[in-house]
Amino acid sequence: MQTIISPSILSADFADLKTDIKKVEPYVPWLHIDVMDGHFVPNISIGVPVVKSIRKITSLFLDTHLMIENPIKYVDAFIDAGADLITFHYEATKEKTLETIEKIKSRGKKVGISIKPKTQADEIKSYINLVDMVLIMTVEPGFGGQKFMQDCTEKIPLVKKYSKNENLIIQIDGGINETTGKICTKLGANSLVAGSYIYNSQDIKHAIETLK
Ligand code: DX5
Ligand code: ZN
Image (cartoon, rainbow, N blue to C red; front, side, top):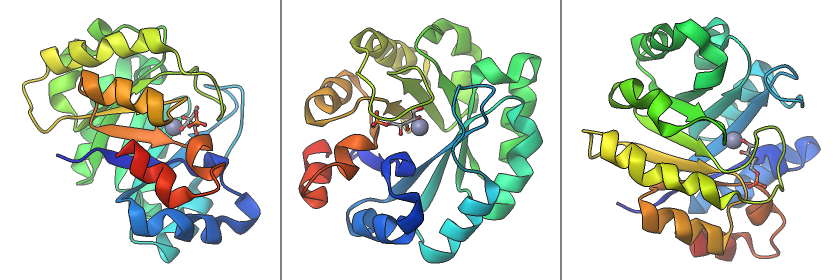
């Protein structure tokens, strides 16, 4: 399976988002949308109305990364807006992890569970076989352009070991470029998110090719 590249629009120009989405559209199957609430992470980005507008201008698979408290409360709104996959943070769900997974599945959408750098793979062991994707963060969530934390990649083979699903998507997000991307795919990751590496590049097509 080819690595699924998911460009993060967090590094795009929000005043010219359509142009920036069209720049990556021919080369990738997915688009990564970072939703931040200023509580779960110390930053605020975009929300439901923006996802709704993006849905109208692209048929890319909308990979929606919710970095928000109490994600279950917003699942319906993001799915109604056009999200194809909802990834929530394990740390944000408290006792509602299972309920959140079931809620997303009940709407017929793909579900991802994400862990921050300090959360161990073991903590989500019992959920790995209930989801379509595990997103391992390699930076503290909240901002683009941070330095890749290589320690976190130790979780990739562990997640693979705990999974009974050969189609499980293991996605890595944070500090991905040509070099760090290779480290992750060698360990078994099959989806890479990249924001600043793609959008700050002079040759976007080439930057994406280097990640594949
Ligand atoms: C960080 C976000 C990432 C971010 C990655 O909280 O989840 O998706 O956009 O940015 P880069 O690729 O620049 O590290
Ligand atoms: Zn993200």
